[in-house]
Image (cartoon, rainbow, N blue to C red; front, side):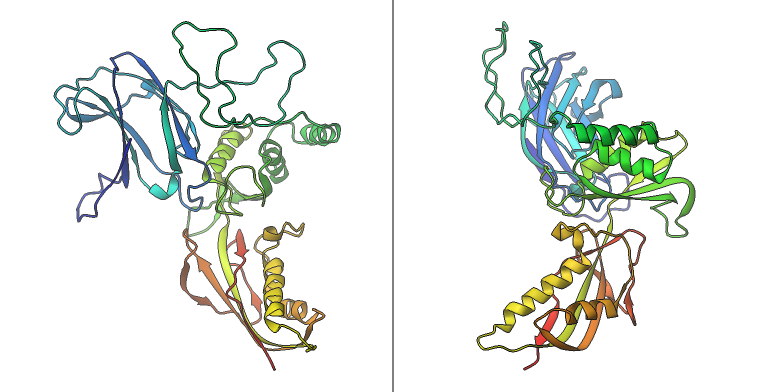
Length: 402
């Protein structure tokens, strides 16, 4: 496997929009063979703030790259955002005249339009298949926990032609048996929405039931996400999911749900909603708030003001970003009065009074970098979108008055 980065160049055509290519070479492959391989990815490492990458699959034939036909390729990786099997029906090809890459191999090229929108590669394994847990002997066997890697090493019955079986990674998905109280709640909700997404409540409950890693969902009805003129648009539904702080998958962009999960949510909802509805599943817009002030502490012998300054920063962050501290209070895009923050700080038992209080608010891009200058507000913090979340920051400037 070779990952090739394209060098920057000046061009006057937009025909080639790929940002990187991955090359896979297979030997002992003949036309019409069935090829199955596993692409193992570090799930959750794709940037959820960017659009899914456009993925192109091609094979090398007579020194030219040719697109696979739709019925020749089956891809379970959802644009390289989750680990999955890739199945290829090998088309007719001629490798003996290849000069772009070594001869006598069947070459597959995966082109991606945005490297930030795909997960990091962990491995590619040929002759792969998927095993599913079933109660084969009807003994009441059910899912309890994921199976560690290298647990499965042989088949239930010997298979001719199979020398060895390897399980290189732990199992995935699976749910434990449903408890009675959960069944009661799910049944009540099912009777209300009837497994159809119509109202905003329906969308939220269907998502929370199917995706346990989702903590909260905001539904914007008749709202179009991708326009700068007017967000009001009939027939559009935009959903903003938030991940749980302790999600099972490796989400490195907390509180953002992984790009793969947002794709799965969108696919799941299209099965429940009207065919006339256009659904967008997007991450929240992130903004940062920096507070500058001077604080007079109640001085006591041996008191470390630095410790209390850090405690004040944590108090501010937990108020602005409750999702990061696993608190129940959670709201999107709420205006926050300066006086509420001042009162919060002043109510701390170790604070005497506060002076020179100022607030700087910044919008962030897809890489969590500040966009432009600080937003100037006179008396309150105003979110710049209908789905803004404030992230915690350690850059609050708090100075102790001696």
